[in-house]
Image (cartoon, rainbow, N blue to C red; front, top):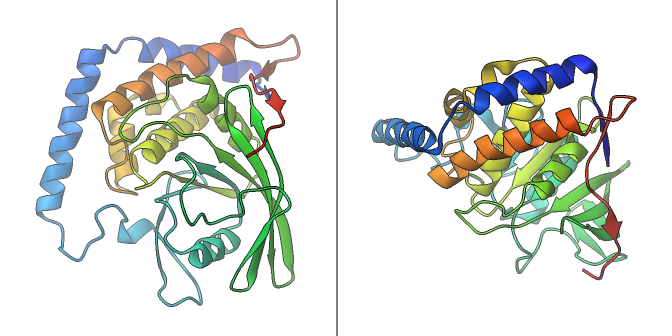
Length: 283
């Protein structure tokens, strides 16, 4: 998979990388404890009726559905972050309503999935039909599915990306994250994308943070290298994003590694190639 960068974008990557390298793991863990304290103070003043993660101000409100609630929040940029869908019908209504063109699933396959697992299979959820058109796995062990969505007179294809790591943990390698970020970055303007794990705060929160930081840097906004402020800001949109100090420190390491890749792997025509070869597999 290829990602083209302009010269000024590579320079922003260089500057951001230098700023991030000034942080030690000890400093990062201290910052994370401050975030934990802030969250605990907020919860003391929150209503018992509040959802533990889904903030009312940014939550996705389903139109024409009863109930209208779904455990998902709009996050800065075009991302939507949430937990494993409880209701496939409501989930796909959200996808259609919000013009989602990609899904990132950061868990293993679970019983009662919200999509057909095998190519050629289809599933109907109310007025929405989902068809699995293809499935492949990259050398980074990222599964990519093409799902066709048919709803009334609409029909479109979205990319479904899946890569799992342990709950409360971090990925063993950066490359899978890099591959999925590149795919999302190339989505057409105006399209949203949904990122989820099981609860929608740890693994999903880590990926959302990385996605937001990298996008911001590539647009020239280097303020996001203050990861503590960035996570605090994202938590104003969905509570508890980035669940452990290990995930918080991973955000630093992953951003630095990806920025370095972007800087030093640039081709003569300012083209950066991500490692994302594929091999067809049974899934």
